[in-house]
Amino acid sequence: MKKNYLKLIIAAVIISSSFILHSCTEDDDVATIAVVGIAQDPANFKGDITSGQVVTLDATKVYILKGAVRVKDGGKLVIPAGTRIVATAAADSYILVEQGGQIYANGTSASPVTFNSSEATAGSWGGIIICGKAPINTGTTGSTEVGNASYGGTTATDNSGSLTYVRIENAGISFATDKNFNGLSLYGVGSDTKVENIAVINGAEDGIQIYGGTVNVSNIVSVSNADDAFVWTNGWIGTASNIYTKRKTSGTGNTGIKGINNAANADASPRSNPIIKNVTLIGGTTGESQAIRLYSGTYASFENVVVSNWTDGFSLESDPTVNYINGQSKIKDVFFDTNVTNKMTAKATDGSSVTIQSSTYNEKTDATGAGNQLASPAWAIGWSSLQ
Image (cartoon, rainbow, N blue to C red; front, top):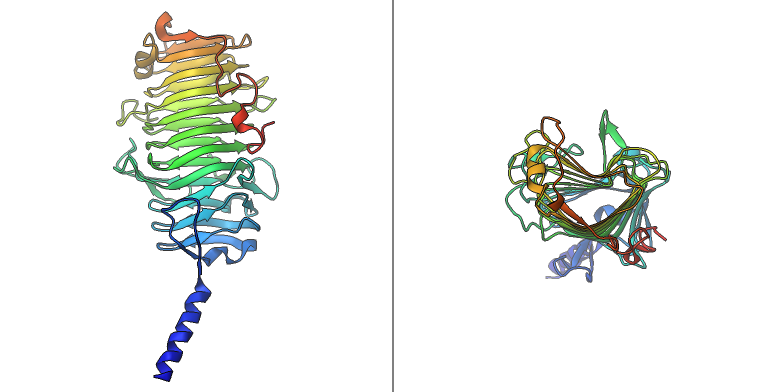
């Protein structure tokens, strides 16, 4: 009897050394037992979070991202408000949430969750990649360039967790020839995933790119990124509200917003068809000309848009895109600053110019865009790095 009792005590000690009790205030869906696992050493933050594990970080510590963190199917990564993660392993430093995995990075306006690199220069680490099970139009499923992770499926309401008040800086490093990370990549992410109050700053590639799925995003800041500020492709059907983008002063970069249905098949289904509201796009002094480029079959509708310092405001390309938008009042309440040369252009699939019909859009001189017309919106001040 005494031997059995001793064995039970020893077993309890072993278990308690591997698990800690955790009361989660961020989301009731997160389990109450947190596996310390890879988070035991903040100075060497990397590794896999496997099924049944919940890794909860400590906001009082700085986590040094020395490699990839992969949240596997059934695993959860919880990052409390105020947590700082600093990457030191260049292209090997990134966060990847696989299908069925979840991330809960929930900051506040006073204490955002921040991701940066020790070099603090554009393109000095990877970025954040989330893979869901929502529909895409490149096949039933696809694989990410980074990490070869599967994404896509049939679950429109898939839930990959929650990102709120998150700032991602200096991401977008090149990891192979002509292949780069984005600041935040959302692959087939479902509508039950929460993505709001996200800032992507000074990246070397796209700020945010959405690859299909049904995720809705709001309060997005994409500033000083070297490629496109906000991109969708592969059949994204969702909403985006409150988008503020600003180019580097040099104008380095491409478009403010780029919308694509499918690069290889303009009529692939499901067709990209987001609803975009409350947008401010401020260009640089030089660089690419298009504030908003819609092509390769994408549909979209826009409302309350401010465009300043671009050669072209809206550029419509490809027959499906032009036919859906031209003359259909899909673009409402736009303020074009006086420094915008061409408010709207359109080209057919064969490259020929198309005349813009008067009912395609309407102008509104007091449009507020992301909230404060040309100035930084109030909702973004502070936590996003905007002043």
